[in-house]
Amino acid sequence: MLENSRDRTLVKLRSSGNEQSQSHNTRSLNGPPDKLLETFKKTLPAADYAVLKSPGRIEKSCEALNEGLCSGTRGTAWDLQLYFRTWDFSLDEIRMPLTLFYSEEDRNIPPALVKRIAATLPTNKLVMYPNEGHISVVVNQIEAIAKVLVSE
Image (cartoon, rainbow, N blue to C red; front, side, top):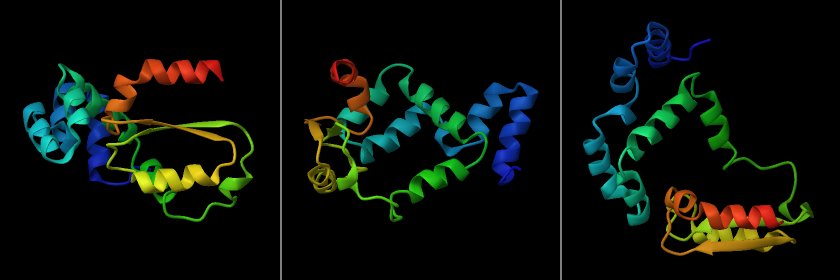
């Protein structure tokens, strides 16, 4: 079932094949790229802004975000509520080796929280990337992250 009129509009535009209309009428992230970048420049860490400013990146990022929302917002809402609800297990019960990757300029997750969580995990390794943001760490450090994951 479609959750709201924006979802119905998105489905209608998708079924009509009108990709240009879809990319400019269904979500606020689909405004003109230069205006989105202007807004993001004020709110994002410099590293994240630099990544989104590279040619075609803002358009592809918005496309991916919109695709994730095309069937509604329930999944996003579920994901967000996980931040605030009590889990049915304690982190110190996790016994498998874990590697946590964290970018020190990430404004979504405070460094103190990451360090506190890492301290409760008995078998973790925390890899911190200075001068990286929430978005940039995946782009700029993907090879280093992949190396660690493959070697484990």
